[in-house]
Length: 453
Ligand code: SAJ
Image (cartoon, rainbow, N blue to C red; front, side, top):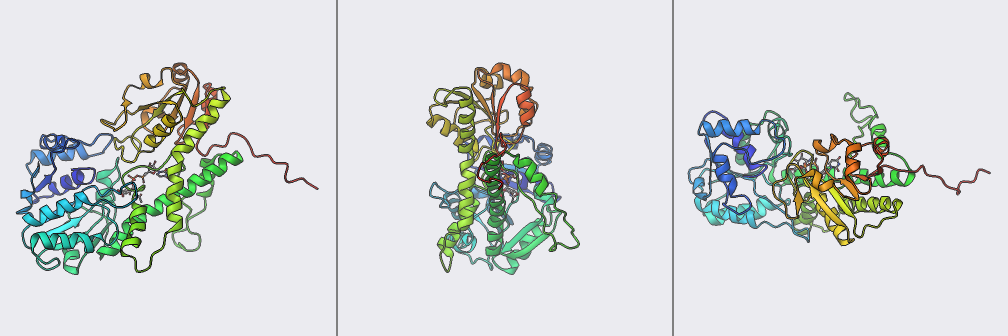
């Protein structure tokens, strides 16, 4: 019952004739969701349009309930798996949860059942890891006695229901009958087109679509550093670049430009991990091995952005004759994405650790987050009062409404480091702040190299 499982379950439970059972371990971190959901309450914080009403409705009409045990699989006609599939510090996929769930499901599932993997996995995992696990624990033949497909989620916090129903869905069965049954199932909730393919191609497509985004963000982040060096505004450059016309009738004549946003880093459960699943797949299943340079370099660039934000702070402190050591720094935003409570792989944690390492005293603030492995406060006043600087890491709407003039009065040193283009340099300077922004050049480039002869 996570950011994928909860909305998917509730959507199916809202279809006449469907009865849905959510399975959630009573773990310290997530066990509370079982009772919360069975009371018809939405455990996902932040703005999630339509989700709370939907959960309330399907629990009230008795078509959705949550249990702990796998027994629920015994009379299931379809079983969807949306467990976490993280990578470890060596960028290697860790499939303990997936293994445990597949082995347990295998012991309870009945013949003819359809199993769907929604979690993003390293390409090759469905055919070479999940299928043999299920066959061994169920003593049944995949594709004949039971069916299996990889149908990747495309959810995004802040628009879970919309993405699940309005975005095209990839259906990758291990064989035709598996694809047919998965198509029959998802056509119930997906209003957009279903694209049918095989499991391996679907797995590659999923990690490539996220890697595509990560590489594009890395390109924008590198352009941001160039703009800072040349003294121009990368966000203005992005807008100018994206003005190139796009004539849908002649798509190949002038491919669109969709330069992404530079920023304070790339977080979430997907973009920081999925490129490594692609690298891992070549390592494990590739006929010939090689290291994808562009993809790996892009990860390095995006992982370096939170540290770059600390460099911008150091530069601004110097302007006030101050050092990072001993500086009290308010980091606004723990969640990795605006107006959500999702803290997975948040860039703010890297910033916090880097500041600590440099002897500064960082204070994390977030209005939505409930729990986090690092200390944080939900009291904005407490975070800002007496700080030597504030860093905007996440673009929560509360921060965009900040009155900079009043905010400045709370700080000891009026420094604003903008990691998400939330403010203009002009507005910040006008309010008396020393301002630095990712991608925001403070001084026009001048050089004596090009002597006009
Ligand atoms: N980010 C930038 N610049 C951008 C866009 C995002 O710096 O131009 C940063 C965000 O601040 C955030 C991170 O990247 O820290 C990820 O943001 P995101 O908007 O990609 O959010 P995710 O990771 O929740 O969603 C992505 C989406 N993938 C694509 O758009 C290809 C979503 O559609 C997927 O469903 C999701 O991954 C997933 O679950 O795979």
